[in-house]
Image (cartoon, rainbow, N blue to C red; front, side, top):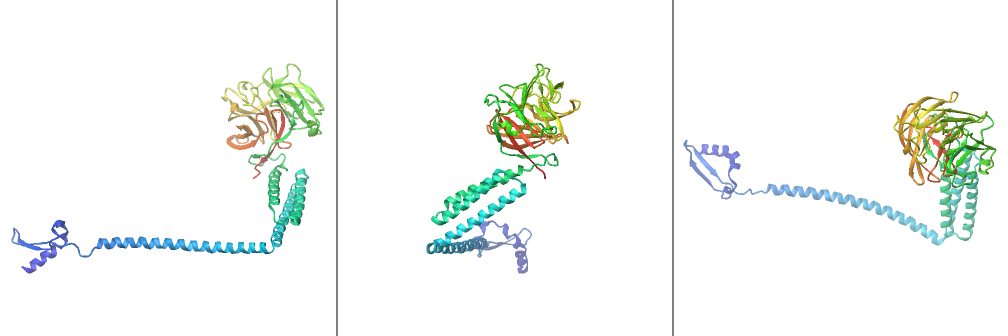
Length: 457
């Protein structure tokens, strides 16, 4: 019976967990006989003597505390290193103050000597720039003069005010900014004329403001100026100008060179005959001929200065309903670049978007067209360079942006954001000239131009 009891107790051990919790407290054991005559024992166990769950909790808390101690120790080590570094700097500063207090001349002498070294480095850099660009620009002469003046100021300050370097440091900062501007602008000083082996325009220079128009009329806000984009031999330096208070086009003035343009000393002018006059200001001079928008009939107009003859061609699809945003009559825009002669317009078929047409110069006719994604009425102006049309638009009163380009070489268009400053808000013409890689803008009556920077990479 006892063996049976032990066996039953052993067999029951895994099932003790099934006994309700409330029955564990007495610690008694009772027995009874089952329906089949077997001995059935009931064991009531007391609470567990060893608190395993509390031990687990303490172990978790201990791990957290150890981790926190490690973190705090790392912080202490970091603070210790910083303290050592600060103490080192403090010692160095104390040493310098001690030197200054005992012998100010030695300390200041070192500062002045460093200034002289930097001035010599500036002068060397200016010389390198001048040699690299093979230029005798007045900007370099001005920088040389300023460096010499700075050297004299350093010498003077050293003799009578060795404890005050603030003035010289301010002047030094100004000189450094001028030198940086000089380096930046010198990127435009040696254009690779005629080379189209690049990926397009990346930047324009600051506006170069020549003068108010040759009539000295502020009200002559419509007009254009520039050079022949394909000059005859001996005519490479000739400039032209046309301006008026409206977009009417009938008289062009010519000047032997830029100096005579600014002096308003023309070599003569041309008046278009009645019936051949035009309107709009996107005209150009190319191969000694004026290409312009003829008024009646609405067509491409051409005046050959060599033999004083007129010619015109109608583009059936070109429309007078679409113009640039700065003027109501900029329907046809002529351009010339390294690839030849062009005209840009919009049509009903293009839904107001700019169409580029390549002009056959000999036959004076359109030989090929490309449709772009640039809406003409949202565009301030456009120009061609190396077979690529660049369209501009206004950003704000003082800023314009080249926002779109269409490459006729591969038939692809893309959006850009090349911003550049304007001298005045509105302008009536903008043309690129491949002979000098300048953009010519007639900006609210003023002669304005820009250097063009191409991405040669």
